[in-house]
Image 1 (cartoon, rainbow, N blue to C red):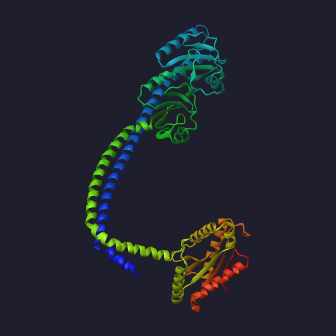
Image 2: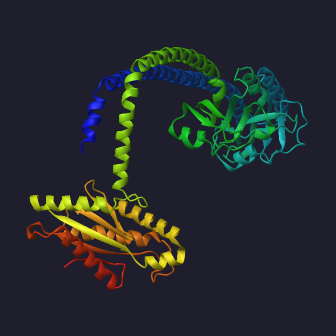
Image 3: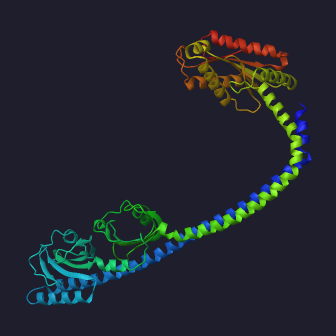
Length: 517
């Protein structure tokens, strides 16, 4: 009982104060280094967020500009179609009007560089007139998507179809079309304007998007109209399952985000915007890795500078701490033997009170503990309960599986007991052989019985194989006894009563808990 006081005197001695100074110096140095690291980390993170936000704003502005360009390009073609449809429905194409229409289409096409051609088809899909000088009445376009759409839909507005290859020139084009009606409102044909995809690509390719940047013009049905970098296989690819259509567009017609492409798997910083008046979306995106390349260089430089400063501080701190330790080395060595002796005594004391196999309290600690708790219960008139646990058919287990397996079995049961002893004031001990004891201060026999049942059921549920047992698994029998402080019962009587209850449990078929009478 005198050891703690000696240890306290050692800790309060001058070497103890010196060690405190060393720890304080180390703590201060660590705090300074940690603060510097945290500040730099925060600045690096803020710089990263700034880079990403700056590019998001740039992509948003670019998407807005490209959307305006696309809207203006298509609007010019649509305006021509509107006038053409009005002329056809009001004037017709009889006689020399067809020749004037051909000249008009050619003149209008020459005015707009983005226009690939202007075409008029009758209700059967036959060519009536075109701006390219091709022979009419030969080709038939009734199988094209735009023709089928207008034939089946009375809508008089413009229709933008998927990108296709022109049958007359073999070039990739975008189609803008309007329906032509007879005076009675029935379908009379289609007026079509085709726009070079190269018109968009020339603009997109002139914009610096880095090595892996992307600009898409996408239809409302999620199909790609044109994509930079251009790849014929990408035209018409559906993006319906991409984050743009599943997450972004449902929340707004324009915005920015950082998403991963479903086409090439690259994560990009994107800006997107719907084209006003037409079922199209402009999508501009920069490779996130390229966006952060400059930030990485800045971060590496900052990290290198901070590392040098931290290294310099570390060297200075190390020399300072080393000097402080040298000053106290003699005093520490003088007390070292005494401290080691005290530590050895404490370890021996722990070993003397602990069961080497299970790690639970041993019989000696159990006897001291229950004696003390019995006295406390008698003085304070508080409850006390004892639970005795015995492994069923353990000798047969040892004979069948061997002693090493028996030792492991006891360790497993000890671990289960510890799991169900929740309060700090309770004690679990190995009573002897395959028998365990649990002391529960402040608990009556009812509470102890509940604990006993939890342990018994947990052991059975653990499913430790025991082919020599009727149950097929390891089980335990439990005896429970509550201590009545008013009865002046001795500690030995409490243990005996719990042991008798355990005997009754075994005699009654095992794998049960019994409360002492």
